[in-house]
Image 1 (cartoon, rainbow, N blue to C red):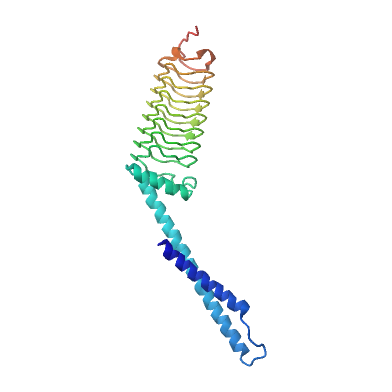
Image 2 (cartoon, helix red, strand yellow; image 1 turned 45 degrees about the horizontal axis):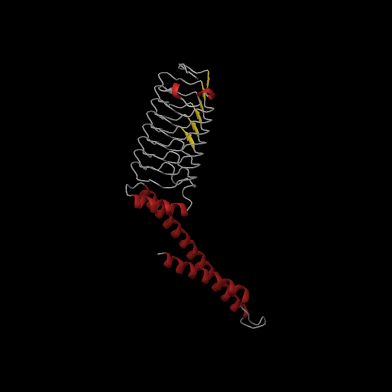
Length: 279
């Protein structure tokens, strides 16, 4: 198909060149008695060839554009497959067309897709549905994850650094050993998510739901959590060096007294703060 398109384009360009050559390079005696007829003949021929060339090139452009659009639609469908081979190849081809950055994936339904070990770095993933998707060891560095749904998704050892979480849903998501460092999280829902051994270094969390979250042995160094609900969450043995809680509800949290480096942890205007022994 690509070869045929190249032939059509070559024909169009050839007609265009010939029409221009006729206009600028045709020669005949000016004082010849048939000069006006010949001049008109060349003008008509040149005009016809030029029109044919433009028509061929326009049709070829529109056809090629349609083919690219159909190919992109097919690749986006394959990206939602449960077959790891399909999804890997589809993502590779989509990257070649810059589809990850141009918004082509916005609002895509990838529910249940097997996307493990794939690299989505710098992608615009707003409103994408990753519910029940397998995303283990995926890379989402510097991605826009606004309104993205990760409910029940498997994100073990995923790398999500420098990402934007805005109204993102991660309810019951498995983020065991994931890395979310330097990300910005706002108005997001982590209800019952698993963040054991996860890295949340220098993360900004604002107005989010962190209820019933398992943060056992997570690293929250220099992280700031503001205006968030952390009811019944498990903070056993987390690294809280320079960790700041501001206006948070800490009712019934578990293991907060086992925070490592808790002498540098700050609680600013928080509710239901447990008594912590710094000795």
